[in-house]
Each structure stands twice: as C-alpha cells, then as structure tokens.
Image (cartoon, rainbow, N blue to C red):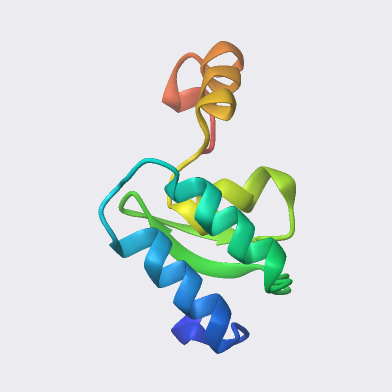
Length: 93
C-alpha cells in the first residue's frame, strides 16, 4: 500500500481492521461509520494489492471506495460489472 505514505494513523488502523480481521456481521457498517466519524478522506490514488492484483485506487472516488476500504467490490457493483462485462478479457478490472 504505497508504504502507508499519505495515510494517517487512524486511516491505517481502520484499513488494517477492515482487511485483516475475519468477516463478521456488520463489519462493513463499522468500517463505514469509522471512516465517516473520523473524517478519513485520504487523497489518492494509492497503489494497493487486492485479490492478487495491483490497483491505483482513490478512496474518495465512489467507484473505488469498496475496493480500497474492504478489499472487494460490493455485490451491486459486481452485478453491474457482470452485466456490462461478461468476460474478464473485455473488462480491465
């Protein structure tokens, strides 16, 4: 994650919790509320590794928010992408 440069300590703590703790009910709500309560709006893009791929993500961008903070895209985004990009070759995800 770009060596953590550009991220404050609270942002790194929330990101570590989100990415490295086991999945549990309401985890996305906790992360989302922490991001909003602590006003975590890091200026990107940041080079991160998600799902074995490197990405340049801007967490303040709506389309990058889930992938940056949660390490995965939301179900809604995945459905939309599967409709418009049925094969991975045609999409640059």
